[in-house]
Length: 253
Image (cartoon, rainbow, N blue to C red; front, side, top):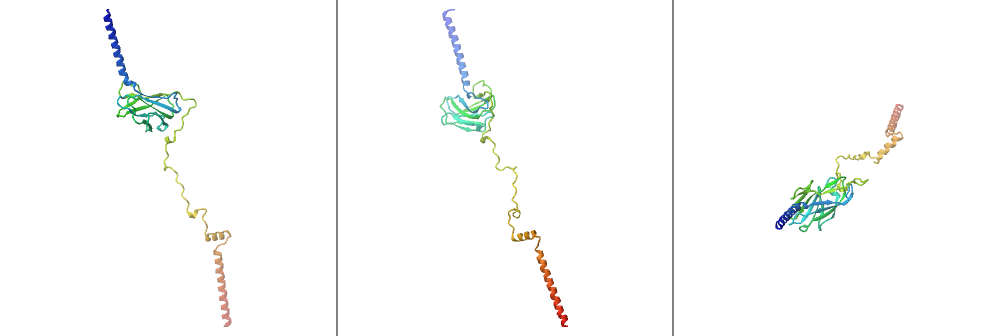
């Protein structure tokens, strides 16, 4: 084989290799973007754990403005507090998780935020489905439970692997804000007894007639006895007067 033929063959092989590398890079670019969650030494039932979310940008025309995270079972929105993030960003709880949002970051800039979880559940791994929003309205959905096979807006959700719980670790009680609030006017409450009538109260003061009656009953007398005596006296007096007048008439005649 001549030298010129060998040179052409080497060049041809180099061109094929370069094309293959370029194609690989092009196909790998969309898949390299991601949202990840991490926590050094995270264990099941660990308390006050800091979770770090790293969101890579996929847009070359808009900046990221919000991350919306859907919490796994065992973590309530009230269990999460804000750690740190881009300037001006704030955390807000939602029905199923929380958002961290604020002014758009510079185009092409990735976002890193951290939150503190009151206690991790007793599990081997936790899935944090995440929506990543840009200031032009684009939303990347990191919600798939398996590795994505291609680019576009469907990507695998961030997963946090947990070590086994420490010996003696126990679930803590939920915070007050997460507990159900009792009704202000329970329907099953036992009605309070009504106050007894005034005439039946123990501290009612007796009247003068009541005292007189009570005194009479205590010493065995009764108001009717003096009245009967008075009637008898009047009857005897009347009979004596009648006998006296009759005697005078008889003596006179």
